[in-house]
Image 1 (cartoon, rainbow, N blue to C red):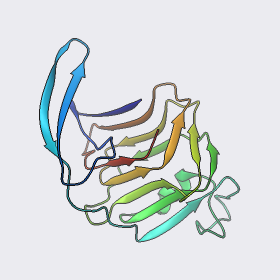
Image 2 (cartoon, rainbow, N blue to C red):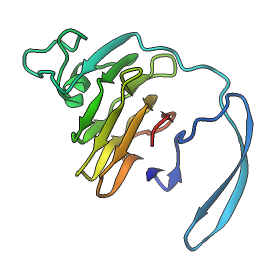
Image 3 (cartoon, helix red, strand yellow):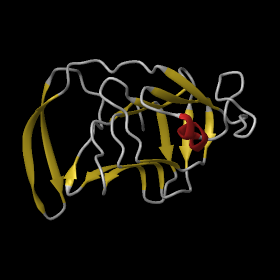
Length: 173
């Protein structure tokens, strides 16, 4: 399941939709009447990352550099080094790490990325409350993951002290 809830409002991009296209959306919640409204997807393409840090099952958070030749083991270590425009790319395999992105902002032109290595399968497999948890973090792109095994939600985005907006989730299941 995907939960994107911010201060009483649902926010975020949850589906891979065509750019610059009108869509009719229906929101239904138990106990409330469904709401139907139209939205238009953005027309601009997502810019590519400016710098890439690598996380791999055989990486090392102490001696690694975050490069392809010397990856880190955890996303937590990559997040310490990341700034706007940077990407954390995870090599193939299964991870039980609870990814927590807290108070981390990209910008419209310098998004932050959390993504699987191109062409490789990355499975985020609990047992954790959320496989990926974003709090007060905006302008993120999360893509190409299989998420399972969480005890609450595979992906949660929420804001209690700051914005959690303009995030994109692509090709995740």
